[in-house]
Image (cartoon, rainbow, N blue to C red; front, side, top):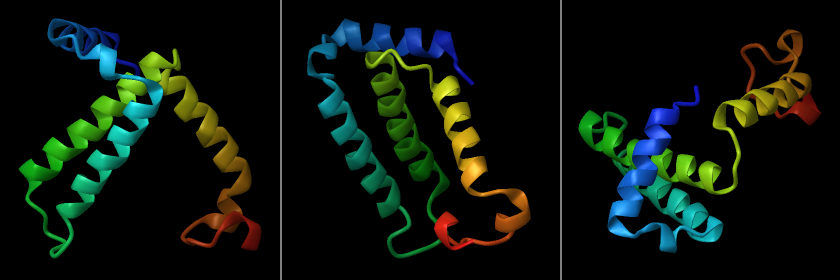
Length: 106
């Protein structure tokens, strides 16, 4: 999943504009939330959101998430796989398949 050329492209883009000075972990986390709200707004009144608008907002969320991971020196693939491992233990297939029940109520 880790796409090092993509992260390098993001770094170069931010450096060219001198934007990395604004990219504290706190600011990046805030930006993820703001952009996630804009993504959700695409679906505010209609489940059939415009695909192009959704793609743009999703790109913003993913960009800030990758920048935050990079800033914190976290490998996105590694942390996702570790989280899936922990989630798999909380939600074993035989108990959770087809259900949305929280793990402590399975």
